[in-house]
Length: 301
Image (cartoon, rainbow, N blue to C red; front, top):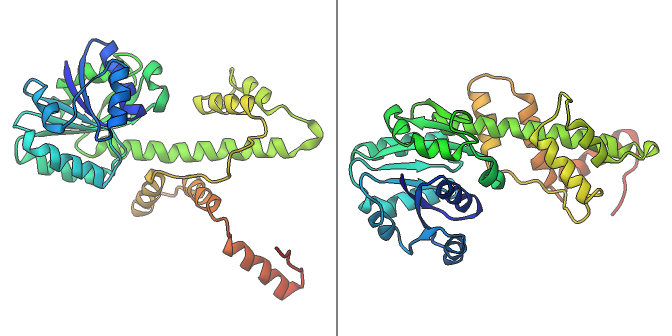
């Protein structure tokens, strides 16, 4: 099957390479010439403009977007739209908000152009291990592109599937990332407790390695924790600043809108926000209040 891949960053290029290994033809485009050159060096066929990408594919065309969520997706669609025709299908494999996917699907449907939102998980390891794919959109369109999904997934019969109409794929991925926040926070807190118990002189990488086999908490995240601790036990050179891509925020907002209590995911998001407050005004005010009512004193810079 022929596919156009728009966005040849590390994940997009890895997906293109995995598809090519599976016998599919992929033509890629990236507005960053360096990313296009890197992809070409890996054997991926590339073009230098969106019209050339559309022209290189047989009709009806399938085009897969791997660009940052938000305005970049809309800008790419606007630039691509003149080259699209009825019967073509556009796939968004990025972390777009599900509401944006619903809006884009409706806008394209007026011209007979299909839309699939595909929540894609697997990160930089997907080239070898495969990708988890939750697909939202028309069932016939999902079936049409099934050979691509089966190649990208860990195996043809697992790790992927259509989960509902337009927006459902990205909604499922949003919640997936919210769960991920909570799991990561639990591992971080647990290992912080282990690290603080100095009297036992625990080898954290060893503990993580032991837990990787047969324990209830064995997981890929634990595998990654073991690898990180083995290579840098004290985590030297890593700033305590944890970013977020927005999906955790969206998950918390949906939980509130749906009256679903989600304290773990919410607190893990708050922990990330807290990590970025180098000035910590709230903590300084707490110290001032303790001193004001109890005379506890404050530490001065």
